Image (cartoon, rainbow, N blue to C red; front, side, top):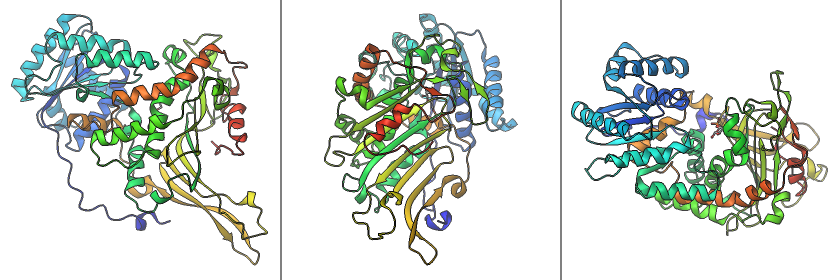
Length: 512
Ligand code: BG6
């Protein structure tokens, strides 16, 4: 397919407006997330004039820095992780808007200093008492920070300005802890002030799922149990646990990826059309979908969910890598899974009996995140000399990353006197059509939060329902230790048991 010819011209799109005035306070301002993602994202927003005109950034962390040292720190982060350096003009604009307040997150004096500094910033930069607090900290600091803010009157929206709090994942480690965290936050903040991040929702291709489904008339009629045979959702990574062994060994692949990122993909690909694109209209539909996922009974967990752990092996670039149990800060006898695959069904009118197969893992053969919607075969084999098994059934694949694309697979006649068939693909590739714009995925999320649009953030009930679905799996896996770990080699496609999960239904995973 000629991508350019196929797409309509992107004209008539109203220019995006700058958000209204605000100060953004980053807790964990000297940490990894700030360096790798927030700083480049703010830079990208600034470069296209999408930061507020009346704006300031306040870094908060325990390191003893002053404003100048923090400005330097941000500049260094941009040099290391950004797509460009600040020009002299950009520097002149941003530097006087960057501040730093040092202190521990349990120390009331930090919050007093922050309150006073924000009052000065309001006067100097006209930020109108609008504050966005980004909690780029480990999860066990979240409650302290919100309480600290409340203690000095910074949490409640009583003075006319907005107060928004962005909370990073992991949001709890199970249903009970997620509920407890929600209650603790909601005791101080209203739900509309809480922005729970799932960075998958910041990805262009993830946002495109709804556009693809609901802005095109031709797909939706097929998007149901009459035509769809099954759906495969894959989030495969080549990376191991990097420097995050301590966190990961307590979390594992299921907690780390499934109730959040994979369920985002699952709900977007299956939810009903919302009545509007308002935050709650979209989140209501996602919730309804998650609530329709059939609970896995404990006695079915071992046949519907597969876990794996990588042993040593080779990466695609043939580098030898160690097994999970030899990674830094991982227990030498660890039973933590680095791979999880599940079969789920959605008990509603549209999807009854359609299996959804989800898998995610570290140190797999290739990096690929995709959703493959596999359609039913043609009902009758007209072309008698072509064995049915050779006929690929139609498939729509939404490749989320990398090499972002959407493809449609169908059968055609191979040229020649004989009637032979072959599967081919029509392929739309984002990069070749739109070009590649440097982005971290956090730009949209920050921009939306500054504008008070929570559509791409998780509501409390969405998060809790996600945990509720995986609860039986977590419980059974906790109670019954895995046998045979490690059960897949680094650089492979995952454990053999995951293949059996589909083979029992007469199906196969798409190759990784
Ligand atoms: C994070 C997980 O939320 O998502 C990581 O904690 C994982 O373990 C990452 O590697 C994957 O994100 P992406 O954007 O690289 O697919």
